[in-house]
Image (cartoon, rainbow over all chains, first blue to last red; front, side, top):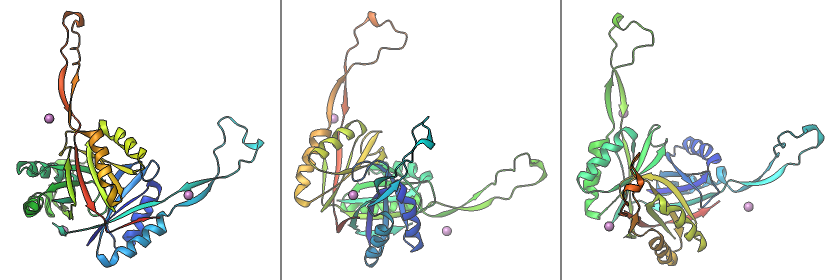
Length: 109
Length: 109
Length: 109
Ligand code: NI
Ligand code: NI
Ligand code: NI
């Protein structure tokens, strides 16, 4: 048994929980802020068997990897939106910091 | 030294903290949601000596076990409460998911 | 690799995060309440290399140790503030409860 602690961005958390659930991984969300990632992150606790760790890590990687997105900037308030074409800007999103912890024993009551 | 992480239902959390405190176990509550249990759960961190783990698990089991409760359904809004006897319904409550983690060292400042 | 879980008072948490950051330690805050310390505490997760644990503990000790402070009591509502000199009272603040956990593996995506 292992306990995986994954710190991910809020925006990726629900997709990750769903993707983990599709493969029968149960997870619990802890609210967290700052530090490893920019503001607005979530820490997921995922319990799994030793031989499922690689699969769980793969799912985290697929759903939360650090990546760049092109985002259309918001038109300035009161600006004339017709007068210019806003250029999309590149922003960095996602990323996951993951600790795999050994577990002495696991119980369900 | 061990660190026990127990995910329990919100409604059981305070009773558990009290029961643990009665036996001199200190615990810290982390707010958590979803996953191992239905919405509205709490993750408790409990630090204890190796030979106290069984006692702590027993207290968690006594206070948070999965169980069924008979609940009187709420009368429908605007219904005539005299006109029928509401049947109590069975609901599942409680449950605990518990990880016992090894601890390298413990410090208090 | 180790994972340090430090439960500290809310009022000390931001100073600790800054002090850790100055030495390139990254941390994530989990909201927590009660138990190890009085109400209003924060649990910090700090990941670090084995040979950095002592330095991290030293920073926690410097910023969060249990200590006594002299605090000017608030004048009673509607009281005549001129009529007496309020005596400062001693209050206990701070304190940290710290678990150093072994880590099987660490990943960043
Ligand atoms: Ni980048
Ligand atoms: Ni059942
Ligand atoms: Ni004292």
